[in-house]
Length: 422
Image (cartoon, rainbow, N blue to C red):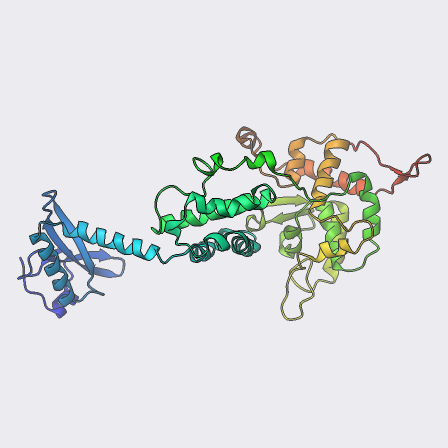
């Protein structure tokens, strides 16, 4: 039964259901059960003149929309009905028009900034946001930065990519992918519609040469495994935490970020295992690293002088911080004969050594490198992490790199053992 509402009556109504406001045809107060008590909202109920079906149009929460405002909303809806129009359809078209007008003011640079802010929490490396910002600012902003995202076309994207597609192919492919992501974000926000002009399929694939055909692949400079013994000998002449961290990195075949951010609570010296949590792994899966005797020796020595929870602490006096990501690289640049190498290259050194001089299975080596198994059948079959086999592999690696080079009498070069038994 309809009754003329008062503000107090609206606030006190607790009976679940629809309550009509007398004198205001179509206006109802809807009461529902909420987790913290009754919830109240305004609804305008009517028969659509276009479909002849009953429709409910929300007018807002009674907490935010007062009685007088709700009545005004109902009056406006009735006026629309008198014109033979559906008020809900009209409101949606009005919102779409406003969204389209707003999109005219959302430039690519603004969308990129908002997109990066949205994506940042999902990136494992804090540097990704800075890299995205830098590449888009360097290559895209000049051409499309001030352009509304709704107006960006294939031709506009080509202006960004064509100057660098054949000369900086690796960079250009990243720029394209990042532009595509920003425009997908803008479409999801309602700022643009239609096909993504930065997409390869159906668009750029026909207008640009295939990147795989022209890309000059650049790998991390790696030390030949036959020279690792001399490098380790030279490395051990350098004092300081950077040299110790680098040797530990080589012994574990780990990535730089995994080593410098390692903490003591990740290490079980008794079990000789270093467990890296999924949050710090590239593949977002926990990774157990078997520790050889030399790695355990390094950790035992460091434990005696422990100053923070970081195994390889930086030099900050204010707050405990890990070793800088550039520390090991700077050390290598100062080593005579090794200035062009990078720490990450030792993973390739380890991989080449294992493939060419040992009988360990490829799967064991791939697990040691924490590589993702691309073959789904192989991934499903191999459920364990082969920790025992990897223990033997890493001990063999430690023995190899710690062995003194054998001087060849005829050439003056070095000869290294070719086969390490498992």
